[in-house]
Each structure stands twice: as structure tokens, then as C-alpha cells.
Image 1 (cartoon, rainbow, N blue to C red):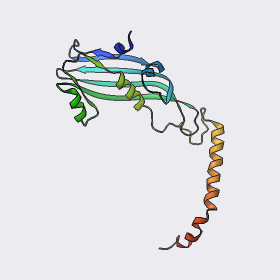
Image 2: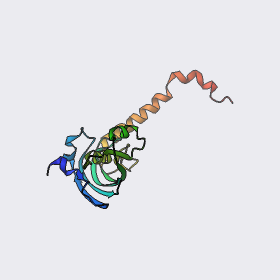
Image 3: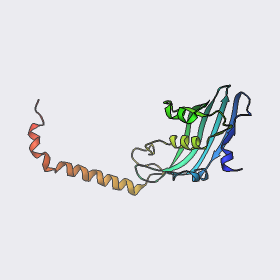
Image 4: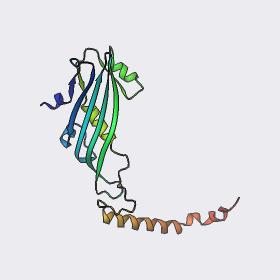
Length: 182
């Protein structure tokens, strides 16, 4: 199946009600987009499209796993994905203008003559939004199975060097006499 057609839903012929679509997403899906900060993506996207007479609601359920670089030790860290996103789609005369003026990010307008709904960009965005901003394992002491031991030692060494520098800093010598003034 053509990749563009795979993520294009012909909504004109759909009866009112809920329609379910399922997609399996891997690294190949992201080839059409910019480079990613993750790899080995194995995501499942369940889309529930609820068609009404004047609008549609889309509920994206994102699940699966991928690998990212740990922000603390830079080793490969597997992450589980799970998130839900909702979008309301309405038909409009001047959809482009309406999208520019709309303040609600969960509202999207398409031209009235449109017959297909393109969802690839939303899947891309929602998978990226499912990844936490701070990507570290749950092991505070960096003793987890994925932690980089050499990075742990380097961070420990740098931490003790910083403490030594703070103790010996001559800039603060003259200011110590003002420390306990109340």
C-alpha cells in the first residue's frame, strides 16, 4: 500500500458513529520526517474516529516502546510509550485561516470540499510528545541494568572536583563576614 494512502482516511463515505483504525509504526515511518532522537520504535496507534454530522472527534491511543539516549549517562535506554490525544476536526470554508486563528491546539479545520483526512503528521507529533522531556532511568544511583558505569565514575569525579573548587574560591573570602548579619 502506498505510504501516503495508508495514513489517509476517506471520511466522506463513513457512516456517523465510531470507526476504529490500527497502525503499527516502526523506524521506517519516520524516514519522511526529520531525524529522530530515538530508534527501534515499535509503536501501536489505535485511532477511534467518531464521525458526527458537522465534525469528527479523533482519539489517538499510543502504545509501544522505543530506545533513547539517557540524559544522565548517554547509554541506550528503553522506554515504554503510552499516551492518549484527542483532536476535533471541523469542516470550514476557509480552513487555513481558521487554523491560524484557532487558539485551541486540539481543534483542526479542513476545507469543506476535502474527502480524506491525513493523519501521518498527527501520529508523528503524538509519538514524539509521548517521550518524556527528561529521559533517565529510575535508578537514582545509576546502578540500573542500562546505566553506563564509566559515565557514573566520571560524574562522581566531576562532582567531587566541583566541591573542592567551591571551598577554595578566593572570591568569597571577603564576603564571609557578612554571612551571619541579621
